[in-house]
Image (cartoon, rainbow, N blue to C red; front, side):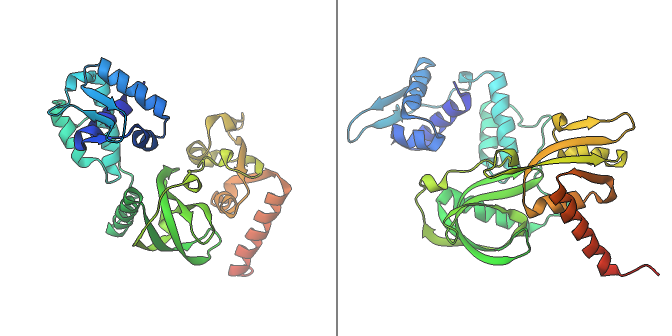
Length: 302
């Protein structure tokens, strides 16, 4: 049973008279049957929750109920506070963290501190994040300028679905009205983000797609790479351990799988002379041509 979901159900029902089982199921992305099982579990734990059928029915709490902290073990209380601390780093959950820390009689401080902001980030980044959070929660469309991986600028209107933090960067999953498809936008390439008045209703087209490149649709490149010992820290930063083999001479052999896209070439070029592409040939050729273009910028040595 998902303790966090049970807690949030109680929290939601304390803030409104009642909700339908279907509303709860959609919110938590589970089945209606699962919600009814959750209601039974809460009732068995002593929470005065009820489910009434019919036109005026729904799921609700008996009037006057106050959440008893003894419903959760000390470990579960700590898990909730740590999760809220991570949310607070993203600009959400700060008020809930303070209230629940008081309810649980804990300081809310501990061994965990989360800061998603990059070094040197300013108020502009925080404003973009706040605008996107508002748009997602209120289901409002946004407009923004976007620079693609190819450096092409376009004005987009989109219906935001989810913010994702992955590989030290924030991404927005949103339904792009121009492309009529779900797209992933990197926040650092989004400029002039504007919250629009238009409201949208989520549908199947808003279902988030996997962010893991190895799970993405389309063919994958099998890269065989050889790194010098000087690149060790980046190798372990960027690749799963099962992809990496350290050789007796200190070099690193990496067997990686990524979708073919412009970013992979920039990623490999960022290692400079510390990486050699063993295969496939088309990646070798693309990097060779990119290197020749860079060399041409500076002319022949004197």
